[in-house]
Length: 241
Figure 1 (cartoon, rainbow, N blue to C red):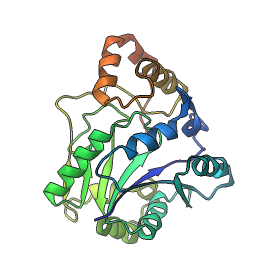
Figure 2: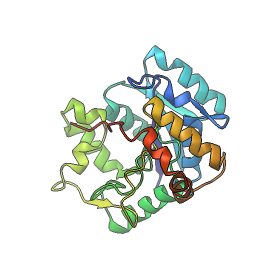
Figure 3: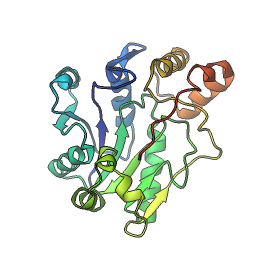
Figure 4: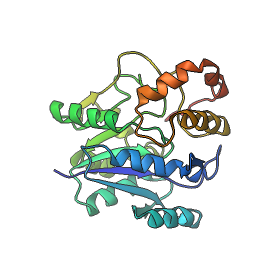
């Protein structure tokens, strides 16, 4: 079994251009995401998947400077970016992470993988049956067979941009499993998509530092400073159509 985490990343962003290389306590958002994902015991390899756009040349240079494996593919057809990478590295399980999650918790990823394997599922997500973790603490995992079927059969460009909708919107075709936490914490927004998000994340990192903190450590800091939640409470999360 080969479990590969693929972190999608690009420099373009309508609300916060260049966000993946934005620094927090001396490291880019992408560096935090890669390093925290690498600490997950259930993952064999981490690969950054960016685009063939010249605008992402700087991102590729940053990955190579860190010694991270990086691959390039279509900008909008992200499913078409994931599948060849998974094939090339011989993956049997693929974990999907987005680079706008610099606070991602390796323990959450590991628990999701364990739940997925125990259920013998085709697809697992921290958003099933509904999201409970703070926004920005999320991951998905799927079998190679499921990813390949989505790659071949999904004809919806909007879905292909988000990689996995074909899987979780067809429960009659795929065995789905979810992994959540003990309460609904989705009122906390720790994803990096706007300048307001960046201010909040900077404050969290300012308290926690570049340490192996958990999402519950971050939650304790956020709850100790409830006024911080107002920084990005008005931001509307983008939805898959």
